[in-house]
Image 1 (spheres, rainbow, N blue to C red):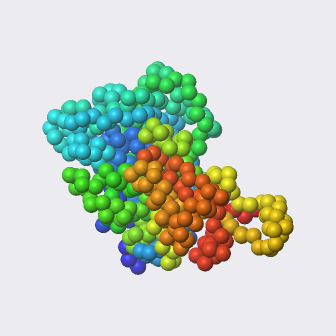
Image 2: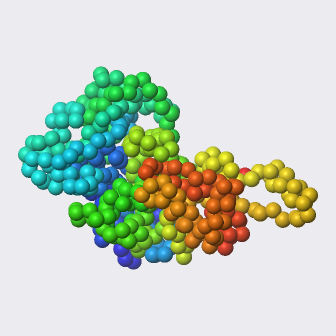
Image 3: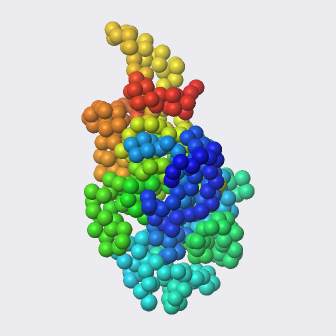
Length: 434
């Protein structure tokens, strides 16, 4: 970083090795108000069966944003998402004892030669096909205990899970079918050819499982959240940390299904230049990601980025599309406002509160902790008591699960007067203009 001239567009086709490290170089710099166009690789299963990737995912190399300083925020608008994979595979995981050092996402090791994060090679298809390049032993730290291969329609409206023959056919041409980016090092999950579910039809709803800024200390990418981050506390590997250091996270690993095309995300800045990264594109996901994993795909993403000077936020804040808001949180219509105004007048007062929705991300070791975290973040950001936030959520919003075990959104309508004080009113009005 330095005094380089900012670029209006930064193209991204390179990836981290699975670790978000503030000491590593960033791309850019990107001008304030500029665009990021990124080719993303699948998250979760591909990196999970590639032990040399150290963080459990494979996210893009971070981009420096000109003018973004610690204590600011950056507004990231998801302009477009184009899924490029023809198919993918997923399922419920089971860690394999003896093939990792406490954490199978971060510290896989070969059970025969003991190499940590070993390089691997593929010989055939199926779970036994991925082997340590040094000694030849089976080396993947996870097995898929119930899985499926899913192929998508040309218009990407639906997907259908395949029988064994179809799964094997895709496995034999896995890199092309997954549309693996040129600089991605993961082994495509299609190699496993799972086929426990056959003929299941799923609707698609693409969104980014990872979108955020670089933490202030090195974090394995999949652990940049309050739930997965707890696995790092006291860990014996090089990314182990103390509990207090979890506050260095930026919660970029959200897995929240409404972080899709048209949504906005306000991200905290914890290192100079922010370091915007993305990845773990999902074709679809039911709230909670109850299987632990979903349909990870490749894609081409366009983001627009603006610096919000002095807007210190303890965690991500979402401004979802109106159709993705909880029923009670949706902006009031003119008819509803007029009806409420008449009701207020009938009871002897003239003023009703003008409000618009915000959605605060909360994370923690479990859903209760995540909810408390989200409530505290909203309280600190808006300078309202937690008790007032609880009432507002009950009356005008909802708590929704992004991911088990501990990612939620605390969504409610915020007084427009408060949004104006924070210089956010124009941003939120732009999203919800009638």
